[in-house]
Length: 115
Length: 111
Image (cartoon, rainbow over all chains, first blue to last red; front, side):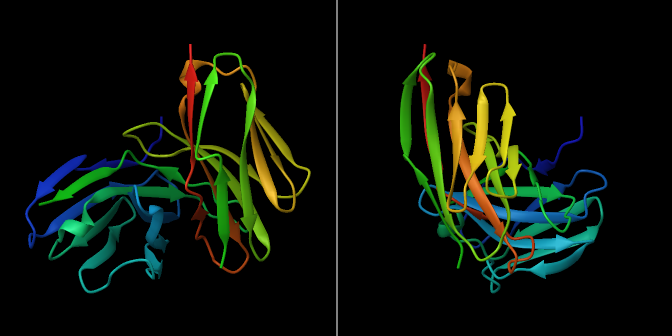
């Protein structure tokens, strides 16, 4: 049963600390997405990669957020330094992007709380 | 800029009481309209993709339809296990692989 995995599932940290979230996409998928979900803003796209290359990170606060794909089986999202307003659920999704379509399959999320 | 509006925000049904959820959208060149289901504490689960007006797709008690301006998710004889938030998203011809999501409809089905 292929699925996206994310670690950690929950993270509580103090303001100013570095936070790293990890994602293992579904094997064979060529595109990986990072989303953030809050009650106020809903589901927002932060960044996405195609074949490990960053294609769009316009939704990400670049002064503190960074996203990478060290290899095809691992995507990371880092926040340094973290702030209370970063508290949210962060989802990773992967998909096999074609000309049309683009079904994305989501992981279980990392619930981040910054105190 | 793509816009996706879902209504109602919340819907309570009795078991067996059929209804529909609405997703209105504004895009420049639709490349796909997507329905997802999200249970509390979980990631969105993919349900359907619709590409062109007139298209319909079904899965168990769910049926999704598409016009040029909106999509409906029809729920026939719902059961309590259908309770979830249903999200609609669109992809257009200028935004690459970016999806724009609506705020969702929270569905509760009472036994």
